[in-house]
Image (cartoon, rainbow, N blue to C red; front, side, top):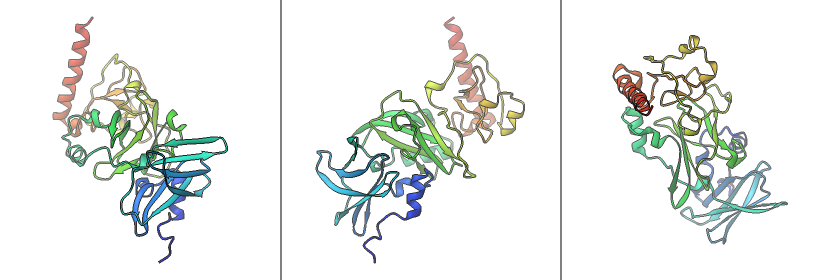
Length: 296
């Protein structure tokens, strides 16, 4: 067998550079192989890249496979992935960064199970962006439900709005895409870069669970059993995504002030699109209105 059997296939390299890889966590990060542990990273603007211990000792020099910033190297004879950081350099200087692809999933199998069963009662705590500590690092966990998307990246000022840098992991059982980004602070502005089921890139999407984008309600529209055809009579085209579904947070449109949807699938739980679930969701809306009125 060739000594290069562990190296990335050129098709994988091209998919990473094009921000179209269907499973970036399967190739990026540290992976045990027959020869040892392969470490691969995507670091734009880097001319050289090393894997180092947290204390700064060099573990491996990573070869640049693509000028866009794809690197890979081998820790020969090693059985398990190490705790490592990336040290990059170019003509302008050097910098150290933590690799988001060295981290295990930040959501658990129980989250997948409860979401699929429609029994998850605290989705807002799992989806969206949340400052957290994960495997000893502080950062932000991003998660969005996009079961039909081919690819999802999170973009923001923290990565120059570059969809190649934070290509997310798809949790096959639930359709959730997630990634933990170390060193991202609370309140960071972000959106999702999504490739639709037809392979076409969509406009950047605001997170429906991003509190920054939620506007105060001025009115409520009750519906039951939402269908994409609703946009034929709701005359607010900006309130829907390319597939015809409302862009909303807890039913409140994040694009049109005062517009609220009731009866959408997974509004608060899986049964939100049924008569029984809609009644529970309506109770939340009514209670919120009553609370606001009591403060007048």
